[in-house]
Structure formats: structure tokens, C-alpha cells
Length: 226
Image (cartoon, rainbow, N blue to C red; front, side, top):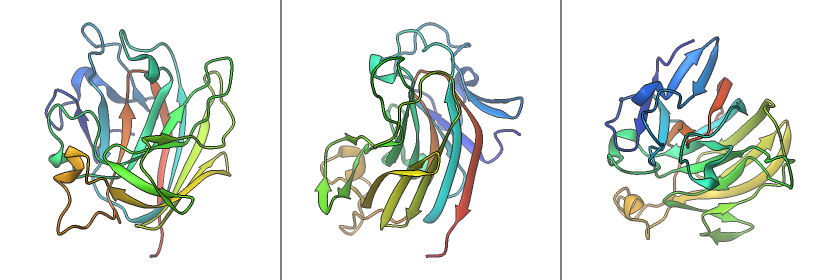
């Protein structure tokens, strides 16, 4: 209905400043748009944070990519967005910090040819355990189908605190990993480590703005018992 309970953080701007109405609600849909930007995108990556942290839960999102990318958005960001989970407190982000320290369920739209999976995992300032081993590469692909065009896709992220995380696309499991944790080698994450603890057991959810318009018609959370 509106952005009550949500706070934007856009690179180069103060927390709470919704530059050029990047995030807005129209006709019952939460939209990420760039039609009011003055000039090119200029790396103004944005995140819309929900007001409270979560630990054990299922997050369900219905999204679709629309329109054309913002002027001079990076090539990798075409039809690219996502949702961040177990994210840092937004107040701890630097003004010019690109992304919150978090785990990203990355949403990608098809390019009209070839395969391009969605609900992948990326790890700004973090690592996970994948296949029983510490996974330090920034991103890993899911095994989802490719979704071309402006189609609605249902993504679900099942999170069990500092334990298992599962990604679903239209009801099918497409990726599993566990033990999300801070990366001691990352400058932003290093500032968040207290008493040597790196395991992430809870954190904030945020929706991304990465230069390509995207719409969210449903964002739901079901809290689970630990």
C-alpha cells in the first residue's frame, strides 16, 4: 500500500533519502524506477530496508523486470536485482557503501537467448558453506529455469538462523547452502565482527535497486519457530 516500515539507503545519499523517488508504490505494486534521475545512473545502488530483523523465516516475493535499464547502468546489472537477507543494520552502512554486508538472493531476468538462472546467491562481505565447504567466491548460480520477458516469478527464501538456507523458484528448490557468515577479509564486514563471532544468525531484509526497473507485487514473511 505504501512504504511505511521501509527505509531506503542509496549510495551517495543519507539513510532515509529516497533519491528521485527510486522506490515507490503505485497501483498496489512496489516499484523500483529511474525515470526521475537527473543524468546517468552513476553507481547509485539502492536498498530498501524493512524495519525489523528476522532470524528463522520464509520470505516470499513475486517480482518481474520491466522496461529499459537506467542510463549508463553497468552491463552486468541489466535485468538484475535481488533481495538481501541477514543484512547489517542500515545505520552502520557508509554513505558511499555499494551494498550492505549480507547474503543476496539474486534475481536475474533472461536476455532473450541462452540460459540465465535466477535466485542465485551472492555474498557482499560474507561467505557461506556450500557442499560442506567454505565457499568464498562472490556468486554461485542456482539450477533454475530462465525467465525471459516481463513475467512474474515467485521466489521463496527459507532461512534457519545461522543454519540452512534454501532458495525456491515457483515452488522448486534451486539452491541450498548453510552457515552464512561475515568475511574477516572484507573491510565492511570486519567492522561488524564482535568477539570473533562471524556466524550470521539474523539480520535485515532489503530489496535492491541496481539500475534496471523491477516491480514487486508481493513481499511476505512467515516467521518460523527456531
